[in-house]
Length: 381
Ligand code: SF4
Image 1 (cartoon, rainbow, N blue to C red):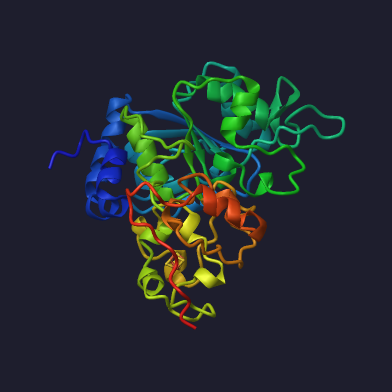
Image 2: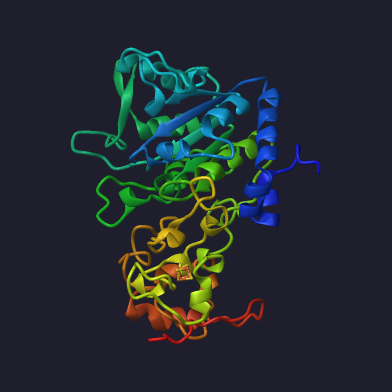
């Protein structure tokens, strides 16, 4: 099978992400290896941290198809700035692909500032964390998050985002915080935290290609690497209305969940030790679009509803606010509503709260005949 010039993301959409990752991991590695050749042996990456906890960087260390070191070498990545890895005496994997050897914090800022304010190229800008546009007392917009200095002046992350996004070949918002605001933009948001797309729009910055949103808390490492490899091969991923690659974001988790049989049989768990469907314990799989159940995590080992807890909805655009919280509150059952279309239809934000239930029911009844209308079965107990 000719795989070398295939768009991974199109293939994932066509076959299902899980099947592609499982069956074609060797081919993906091979195709990734070609990216470096096509790009003259070096792809300049800036991994810009904003308001976040570096969880997506930690997640990248769990990549398995291929792993991060292998992918970095094969992609010909030159990670000119990836702060978490830039320690004075440690070069990840011994390959030197990430800028290292810095002995002071000031030195470590140099490649970042050269990329933002100088001539250093930026092929891919990855944003991890939430842009914070608010103004602290005595500061300027964006000053809640400062990263280093340029010409003796403090530079905030919002400024760097604008500079880097304007020149980058691709901008990829990795993780829930950058894609949708995540926890920093949740209720009580004090720092003006917003998604990357909104920050760029506010600043009037246009990008060379559409910003790609890889939602999740954290982002899935394999999806990130496959997306990187795909865009670096010159393919523009098919994105949904929220800028998510449809390869990984087109079906709700509920559709492929290993507990789905229990749901269909009307058997619901009453405690987390139980094997049945976790709907009543607060599972947000019915309203959360992602391929978690297809590719799974940690090398295809497992994922949330398989491992024990319910889906928290960490990839839902409203996370951590309703409808994914309260986390242990069940998604309401709506007779006549196809639960698999709730998030896709953009009405899931209305799905929790008895006062809104009538509105949802009237707005999203399945009547187009394209899919079998589904209403949750009667409880078994
Ligand atoms: Fe799986 Fe949750 Fe759907 Fe039950 S409600 S089948 S646990 S995704």
